[in-house]
Image (cartoon, rainbow, N blue to C red; front, top):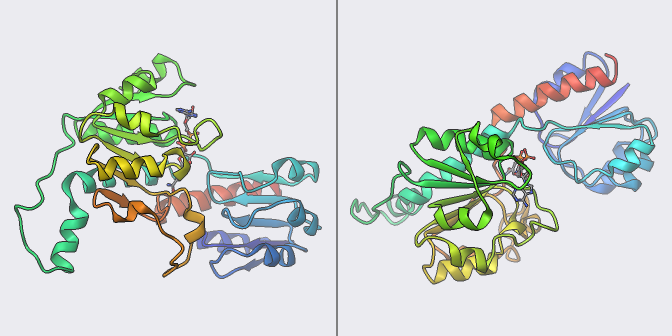
Length: 314
Ligand code: NAD
């Protein structure tokens, strides 16, 4: 049996599966579609993250494939229907990166509230040591509005409660008791936007949620309130957000995702990867690192190993 492991996944997967089959890795890099088509031809198992798309061309090239283990939450990149038709089992690791994303959310709340990023820049780059320049706000006593009360949203709420925050939440697919059980108050989206000091988005990007957070939502926010987006770039209308930040309408926008982020993925010094938001001081961004922790990678890897053993009867 042969196993193809692509991209940067938990090294323990290769170590463990080598006991049962021939393992080939891509040295921690994702394959291009052409490379995948070539490499997958004789594989029985594919372990990957989210690149490249596993479409009909790739699945047709895979003559022996029986299982695809995706070391991530989303499965949008796999043609699940066609894989099923071909008898290929596809599995992922739902929920195992929730804590990693939630902790990054809290860190961004603190960064934006305490201006740690410009302060760091002042000291290290500009050699300015001015303790009076950055007066922050504390999280204690503030209201956090969580939009999307799933695995990540609930963990963010749990962590934020430890900071003394009041939690309100919006999720049209849940009942009031689902919020109460987690110590949160469920409410409609309009009310949440009006009462929150921080609004954190943890919803999937779908045609319904595209641009969900826009000029109209921003207009209803409290003065100085902050938006956090660790979910997907397209959920927040970036032009509307840029205008709000320029006008000083809200306190800031902290994100781990951008609408055009794939254009700049893995590239450095790419002049085409631009956004008006980059000129805003109160815009804090990271390059989609929410799930990038050794802990989440290990937990996901261990789960994928168990699933491969189960599916392949090892
Ligand atoms: P989840 O499925 O556990 O929770 C999503 C929640 O959103 C569900 O409770 C669902 O009912 C709710 N929801 C759906 N549509 C909604 C809407 N229109 N308004 C409000 N709520 C809505 O998913 P999760 O694991 O918590 O992940 C949430 C999102 O975070 C993912 O869809 C993904 O886009 C993003 N994510 C980002 C990273 C990262 O690295 N930054 C990592 C993992 C996930």
